[in-house]
Amino acid sequence: MTAASRRYHITTFGCQMNKADSERMAGILETMGFEWAEQPDDADLILYNTCTIRDSAEQKVYSHLGRQAIRKQTQPGLTLIMAGCVAQQEGEQLLRRVPELDLVMGPQHANRLQDLLEDVFNGNQVVATEALQIMEDITKPRRDSTVTAWVNVIYGCNERCTYCVVPNVRGVEQSRTPEAIRAEIEALAQQGFKEITLLGQNIDAYGRDLPGSTPEGRHQHTLTDLLYHIHDVPGIDRIRFATSHPRYFTERLIRACAELPKVCEHFHIPFQSGDNDILKAMARGYTHEKYRRIIDTIRHTMPDAAISADAIVGFPGETDAQFEHTLKLVEDIGFDLVNTAAYSPRPSTPAALWQNQLSEAVKRDRLQRINRLGSVKAMERSERYRNRVEEILVESQNTKDPTQVMGRTRSNRLTFFPGDITTMKGKLIHVKITQVRAFSLTGAEPLPTALTPAS
Ligand code: SAH
Ligand code: SF4
Ligand code: F3S
Image (cartoon, rainbow, N blue to C red; front, side, top):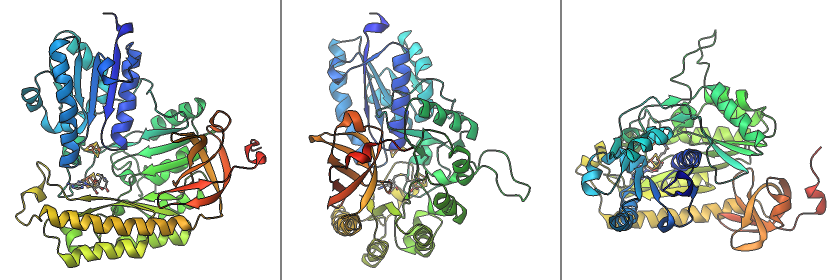
């Protein structure tokens, strides 16, 4: 079989980091001559980019993989790859569990896919999970969108939250240089991308591992400095960043976001719990008072800013009263969106070994309660858009209604409105919001003048 006739399929689980890695691995495969197959069953190479943040995420991949392992018994030419965080966590053991796998590769090895595959095509079963200095990516990612793009700026995590597998599977923090990041954004702008999202597990910890300080002794490479460094790339209209850790979110960063017009007023800052004892048991390194102060400062500086977050309910030992503190934080802040999860014990994390685990029934009940409150609050936040004119960056057609296009407000609310994708894609359009729902908006057909290019 020639390379040109080979087809690949990638299934991605998990977070934005995995999505970005998948786009880079797809780029590598296409450089090698592989073509995308819409259906996994039509592909000669199948790659699962996996997530292990919770047990339910980990289990998902095994059912997918099982099916393809059976297919491989009749189609020995099929190449099966397990990449990402489950691959890193399980390593060699995966080959015992699923002997049909050709390649098991951790997230730090994503950019090495071509080398690893050459080894596989030479007849080897390969496991690549050793800790690594991540290579600068030299291939062109195959990006899902032509309007918005992810840009990795820091890999890994140096925190030790007691519930979390990420430091085990993603390794220590590794920041890319400001020059490499800017070069990537300039290339994206030239290809016509309009919005970039800077990515990191703790994006505001960016640069700590890079050398350099100012004459006053301040570290020279912070996220704030990076925003100033990249802000003027021509052609890019919007800049976002995620995920922020409250421990590193500075006033200087907030001022920069207010000052730099392309930086969107949306901040994703997980709080995890609203109770100080639970935060301590989680080893988060802040109190709910500190978290509230950060949000107050953001809202003082940018009154309309959208705030989203992650929270965990049912952490070991969490009492009813402590859970109520989390609800109170959700109530008081009024988040635009809260991603919630019931605590899931993970391998090789401290909290998984504690004796004070809660029952599934208690966790389920708390999850329902926080989700109910979260939607009420999200709806309240959506109300403020009613009858307002919002700037929408158009990304694609509304998959459910082809007479509409889909885009986002600067605050990241998904917005649909009547329009033709061929003329509107990648454009910033001002739209009057006519209908609001908890997590999305609908706008009126824009005036024809809304389409005239800005001078
Ligand atoms: N670095 C980010 C989050 C990364 S993980 C931060 O520190 O905020 C994404 C989210 O998954 C976390 O915010 C947390 O809410 C959730 N999560 C992580 N481990 C979990 C676990 N063991 N059980 C349930 N949720 C978990
Ligand atoms: Fe996990 Fe904590 Fe690191 Fe976030 S900061 S990735 S929750 S260890
Ligand atoms: Fe999952 Fe790995 Fe991301 S565990 S959430 S894919 S860092």
